[in-house]
Amino acid sequence: MTFDTVCVVGLGYIGLPTAAVFAGRRKKVIGVDVNQNAVDTINRGEIHIVEPELDIAVHAAVKEGYLHATTEPEPADAFLIAVPTPFKRQADPDAVPEPDLSFIRAAARSVAPVLRQGNLVILESTSPVGATEAMAAWLAEARPDLSFPQDAGEGADIRVAHCPERVLPGRIMHELIENDRIIGGMTPACAEAAAELYRTFVRGDCLTTTARTAEMAKLTENAFRDVNIAFANELSIIAERLDINVWELIALANRHPRVNILQPGPGVGGHCIAVDPWFIVSETPELARLIRAAREVNSGKPDWVVEKIKTAVGEFLQANPDKRAGDVTIACFGLAFKPDIDDLRESPALDIATRVAAEHPGPLLAVEPNIHALPDLLSGHGARLCSADNALAHADIVVALVAHRSFRALTTAHLHNKAVVDACGLWTT
Image (tube, rainbow, N blue to C red; front, side, top):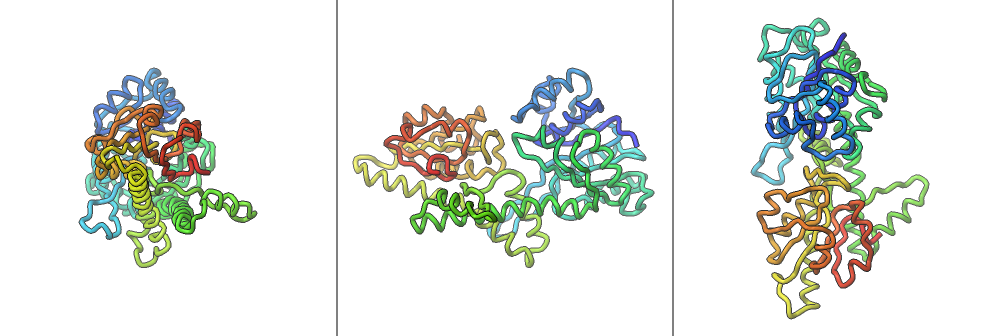
């Protein structure tokens, strides 16, 4: 099977790097996104997101004519759908979040008119079990003149598969190539066709299975990580209650040859670990008890950090009776969901800073070296983006939320006479 032209729908943190890697292997790549600014930026050979080495790859791909971006799909041999899978809005905050597949449905309907016999359609979006089958049904509904695997099996005109990404922000360009890929087809022929496409650039193993197993594998990986992070986060809350330094505690416990406790933080963010476990819970709420408990521990950790900040403000005011709450300046170090990236998706640090800015009557300074402007929700509460030096010069309370590399250069001397709330072990390990 020949895949000379690949159409990638969704040019975000996964779609654009994937498009660039295919283009780097001399495939003609059509990148599709509904964001006109992203399309225009890419067609100038530039990028609209921050990821090491991506700018070089995109610039070369566009300059050499292997990548161009547009707002509408064009005919191709293979179509990759890499769009968001958020949750539906719910009135009950205690209800299990319900996956929103509307972006996948819209993407499927957008590519349907240009499908032709022999095409391959791959869902890359992390999705609840059954999403690939739902996508195939939407494609079949839009193109009754073509046959699909759910009805025609191996003899279908269109092959459909699921291949979830397994990459770490900050290392995406490396891990796209080196990591193993799990490729689930709606039939064995679908899986093998997709594996053949990914072998264009993947040096790791391409492991074929069913679409449902591939969907569940990605969710399982991130649920496993979420459970382990929840253990560390819950331990940090317990240790604080018992007046124990959790960082020292974990370091000592990890000296056991079969113990490897993770580091606690302000919560869990990103579009994977903070989201994927809920896809399992939503499908089997009566069975996924441990997974749900872990997700609730991690979701509740920002509440605990906010309370620690409020306590620090109260203690500062007790020590400085001549001041009022409006006189207290708080500096939050870090807004991204993990160190050394610009990605704010599902970030507990951003959530904490936004809540503090909304409730605290005094100034809030945000230090995030990887972005150029604050999100509207945070700036709308009067927060101001500034440098670390500026924040340290004016802050009364310093809150460590993300352990960016540049923050690690700060010492106790920089924090002299500051109240410190360290939620990520930046200065108290």
